[in-house]
Length: 203
Ligand SMILES: O=C(O)c1ccccc1N[C@@H]1O[C@H](COP(=O)(O)O)[C@@H](O)[C@H]1O
Image 1 (cartoon, protein in one colour):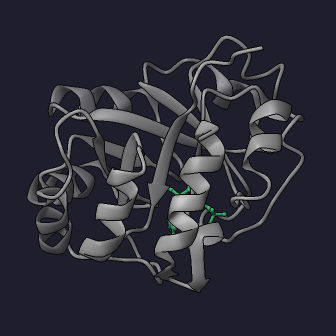
Image 2: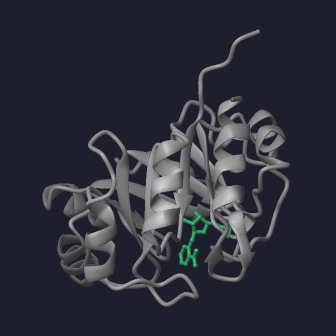
């Protein structure tokens, strides 16, 4: 039985080689972490890396607890098309990012209250482990009902070996990875990036 090809985002990239591998293997989105993290890059670094990403592949600036004006300022400097908002957010934040010309991934924790899974106008919902970027896996089937009918990405503890099962269990639209394609914390492994995308896309 054929299945729709999932949307694949690879996050926390900081080198040209990693971006090129992700692009060549068919990633749909490339994430640059612009918040405190082992993967943090400056908006200027992100802007340089974003020039390597062809049109049609989303460039995403990832934020945690920064307020919206800071998010918008840094994302503009990084010249990305999307922002990914973790932390305490509101529908007004999503609207403000849209008004500034960005598409929005709104991230919620897998154990968030049901109101967090409602449609706040975001372009994609992302359902993640309790601590984003920690490599922590979870019961990917648990939010299937809550997220049913939404366009959403499953994240948290994914790697080339479990991504297909996670997509099947969760019925998510796509998958997002960081730790699972690293050789050590914050250091991406190009071979793992390629394996992850190939596995997710069924190549
Ligand atoms: O990757 C980070 O360091 C990070 C920091 C702050 C907010 C989000 C972050 N990454 C997101 O976390 C998941 C990936 O988690 P994992 O490492 O694969 O378990 C993904 O949504 C990233 O965009």
